[in-house]
Image 1: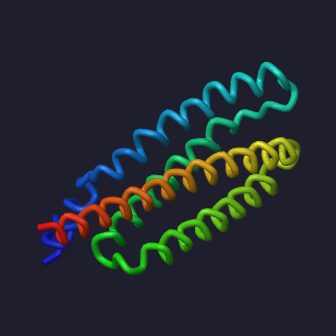
Image 2: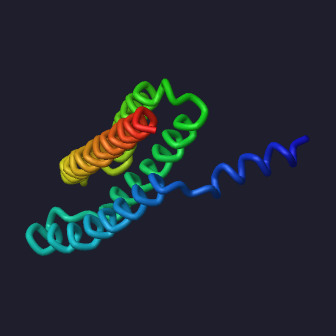
Length: 156
């Protein structure tokens, strides 16, 4: 019984849809760009404010993005009528997780709190804009395909 459950969940996680592949294909280079180029620019422009935990910020957003796309893809097949609610729930969860991470870091490392908060908020906004763009284009493409399908059905 447990093996069937694990196998069905494993198949769900291994299955990579076009949407998931596109999201990961775009967010991975964005994370590398923000992590390496952003870190280099931050260290070059303002070296006395650079902190060692900087590379973990883009990684946090990449991991949460993978979680988010998995949840949305799962909802797309199981509850297609609730896509908007799941998407908004994921946004709220990201905001709450971000607040928790910021609070924990600021309590643990007080001397770098200001730099961390500013950097984290900038990264949050970058990923927020990226996710909004990605899911907006995803929905527009989905509606366009649905409209074309309906037109083809009426013609045939």
